[in-house]
Amino acid sequence: MAQPIQDIALVSPGHAGINTEEAPLTMSPSFSSRCENAVIDSSGRIASRKGYELVSTNGAAVLGSSDGIESISEFEPQSGSPVLFSCGNNKIFSGTTTLTDITPAGYVITGNDWAFATLSNEHYFFQRDHNPLIYDPSSGNLTTIANHPNVQGVAPDAHCVLAAFGRLWAGDLTGQPSKIHWTDSLDGKNWSGGSSGNIDISEVWPDGSDRITALAAYQNFLIIFGKRSIVIYSGADNPATMALADTVANIGSVGRDTVQSTGRDLLFVDYSGVRSFARTVRTNTMPVGDISRNVSSDFKGFVNAADVAKIRTIFHPRESFYLVTFPNLGMVYCFDTRSPLEDGSYRTTTWSGMSPLCFTRNTSDQLYIGVKDGFGEYKGHKDNTASYELSYFSHPLAFGDSSRLKFLKSVTVTTFNGAGSNVTLQWAYDYAQDYTKQVYTLSDDFAGQYNNALYNTTSQYSSSAVLINREKVGTNGHGTVVQIGLSTTVDGREIAIQQMNVHSLIGRMV
Image (cartoon, rainbow, N blue to C red):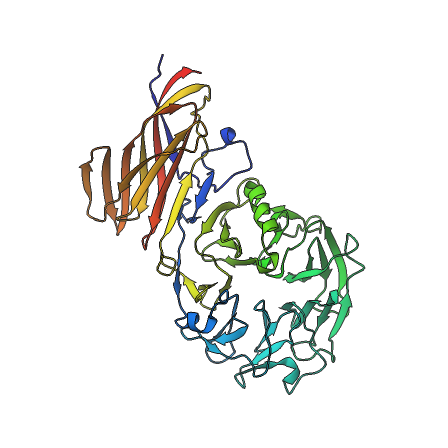
């Protein structure tokens, strides 16, 4: 005999992000099976990500048929305005609205995979098999370090560079994969005098061999990442007496640009996922935590399919996320950093359509994104001029009993903003992918109103220009479990999913 209609309230559905690792039927409705082009907003809701507005206006002309802007950095001199450098089409540009080619005359560039560092009011550029460059604001010129009048010694053509502890550190050289060079104190042009020096760590890799992929500073430690190892030196503020403090085996950074400091931690991409590197004071060791465990299999699949040298990341404190872009695969993973879940993992969503090639934060905390036609600022809700689709799908819902039939009667959806948007509610039974769809349109009238539609009942309320929409959508069909999805085209207006109230009749056992 049929039971009364049962209601299940999905408050902030999917607010714990994507989880594709656990058994679907045991999954909390706080997880989603898919959450695309979304972020977890400050209220804990799934919300549309921002897009980007193109800043550079002549990018297409100067970049030609190249991939686009593949590396970008801002330098803030001690006096004067910040200078933005961007690199693409085997050239180096300065400027924001207009990209001006400042590649030194006669200097041959064969790649756009630059690393940047600032020391003592000078900005440095390093890339494997290229003579390192220096931008000196006193002259306003970009030249090779070798051609600077105050150079001492030979700067290594390293692929990694770090400004920390008052000097430059450089590693990952062709033919010297385990050697690190450092400059004299406060002088990035002095590689042979004063307290400059070098060290070969080939004998301290915990697994016997590896190569340097990234450098980072953490408190008073110099962190040297290999592909499969991490080596930690203490006392790096005085290289003459720094000492090996610890090593970590079987975990490393897949590439130079995956390591990001959050201020209290280092996040990086290993072949096993996104890792958090944090110091435990009680034991004086540095354990590593997996923050991508809820999407582990999928994420590792992207890492293994990607060109790891082109993986780029960014930590943005204002947006509270750590982004990982796989440019050759057209996918971005977004890890929310506000508050980890109970198991230490981060709430995860994915982005598509934007295809970032690189990121940087400028001195005003704006997030710049390198793209095919130049670079843009992370803002607004369009990808330049293009719309994109926000989508959320639940895991299969059994209403506490997967042995009984469910007759879905209606779903009431509460959303914030999205005025004038078309929203598609979708549902399917018993793990099938043949979703039934019902489309409705959100009002673009911010005046409070109430109306009845043919298939649903709609009520809108507004306060301080925020549109709150409650839409009751009639549904049909039956099965033992039901999966619910919501999608909408984001075309300049943000939208957030507040709640779903699912109304279902519970039937006989099957």
